[in-house]
Image (cartoon, each protein chain N blue to C red):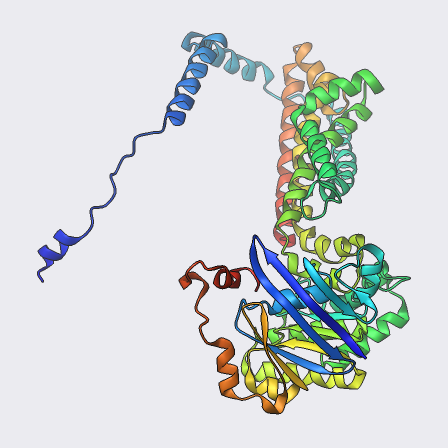
Length: 267
Length: 269
């Protein structure tokens, strides 16, 4: 049975059609890599999976809940099962690494709200947070303010935060796009090790063919709001990849056709 | 191609001066009209300014030397002023935080609540502290409590606005990340927005204390407690030597507090 079942999803921003009938199923425990040029709709699709954006049409079922129709307390409960790793880490800069990891338990009840201050967090949670930090190799940086870490370290903290959340689905939106190739590979290795250990279902967007074919079980390619490719990783080659990026020009160079201007809104 | 030819082909730069718009002309004419009428209505004449300068010299002559006999009374009144400022600002800042979150676009639970809260904050800010003091003297009676309440209203009007503007400037990424974990509204505010705004809120609060200290001095003039009461009494009784002492004490205290506040602000920001 699929853990993620996306059917006929459509989404527009200001009359610009960003997602144009997406169908995608991801079985439990599978790691799917999403490829495609900037602005093809990857981020919008991933945001729909966590209820950060709602589609206008179609269903986005994660587990047994349609995220397109889930609101309020049910949405918050469902979000605990769906971890998100963002391209720009989205850490709270002014607080410590340890506090940022604890934020992964904010959605948990009871005691979630107490984790806004690490001094009030239950001891068991504090210990779990340290284990998560240790897992990403940053236990010795626990008291450092996040802003003093490198990009690669910050993404590790974001992964530790997701680890504490303990989701069964992981959405990673270009997790290595802000990192240099070496740091990017290290972060990707860590991420995949963790999801394999925990048996998570993963949807991860990337731009690197090597990383996609190395770490994904399956590769899905998007172009202008549609899925153009859905293949096992060993079938992916440079020509197929180039096809996804063909005809894509900079947003500010495009003629204002609806399909092209969609690029400006969906990143 | 010669340099001259290149220069000849260069597009002409825009004109140095632009004709002002009709709106700008109307604003200038209205402003000049009000300024002229204002100078006449307030009787600002060279003769009066000159006689005022002479009287000022006379005042200073009569006020010197400052009378230090009542320094303990003046010190006590200054301390009361400081208490009014600190208690008023503390209560005002504490109240400003929820007001600010209700007034900020990114944290208000509903647009109607946001508009209502903004209106309330603007009302508190628009009414001057001296008017608040008169209202509270009439409602709770003469004394420092009226001063404290006036400072609370003034601080909420000022601090809540600055707090809400800072909250609106916060980068949405961390708040979104926390919301994506299933965190509720309060947790997102406490976890992502408050830490990002705390430094700015502290700086604004310190500035509020500086502002309140100056206000608290004048509030005494209408009977709302503090050193203003002593100053008002000394001036009415033509006890200028004592008045000068009070003014000097105020000057020293305000300057010391401003320096202290600036030093703390520099460390916080």
